Every structure is written in structure tokens, then in C-alpha cells.
Amino acid sequence: QVQLEESGGGSVQAGGSLRLHCTVVGRIFSIAAMGWYRQAPGKQRELVASIISGGTINYADSVLGRFTISRDNAKNTINLQMNSLKPEDTAVYYCFRSDFGGDDYWGQGTQVTVSS
Picture (cartoon, rainbow, N blue to C red):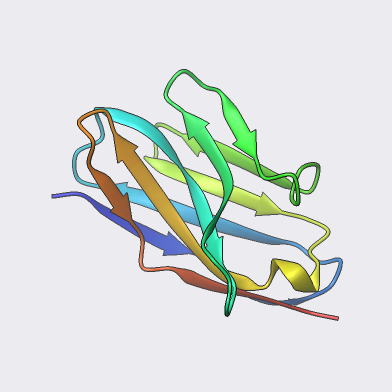
């Protein structure tokens, strides 16, 4: 059984920073990719950042230069450092994991609110 446990969301003023954490509980092999999506009210879920198994990192254009994704294999965590936050970054952020076998797993979501 695989579970993704998120933490680190909250409220911050524009220009501030937050750091999200996602801990993988359970099987830690066969991971093809991990990362973060977000969904703002009334909008579709969008990919924020991801790390592919070979180490390739991808970012949405809207967060490039402001967000940094990292993986700590020893702690089985994936983190998202968010700097220079903007009100348009307000959303529920979801950690995800995609396995080589085709299975996808999602965290419960953590709210990030950026006030102007």
C-alpha cells in the first residue's frame, strides 16, 4: 500500500515563501516520476513541478525561477520550495507519484493561500 503524506501549506503575503513536503509511505521502488500539481478554484489541475526517475526536472513556466523541487531519497520525501509567492499561486497543492507499472498515487492536498 502506498500513501503520500503532505505538509507545509499555509497562508503568506505576496513575496513570501513556503516549503511543501511529501513523504512516501510504503513501496518506494518502481517510481517513474514524482512531483506537485495544483488546482485553484474554478480552474483545472495543472502540473507545477516534477522529477523524472532519471533526474530530469520540469517546471511550469509560471513558477520557473521561483519554485524549486527536490528529492531526499534517504527520507523518502519530495519537497517544493516556493519563493516570491504571488496571489495567483493560491491553490490546493497535490503531491503525486507515477509508477512504471502505470499506477498513480495522490496526496490529500494542502492549501496554499497568498494574499496581496
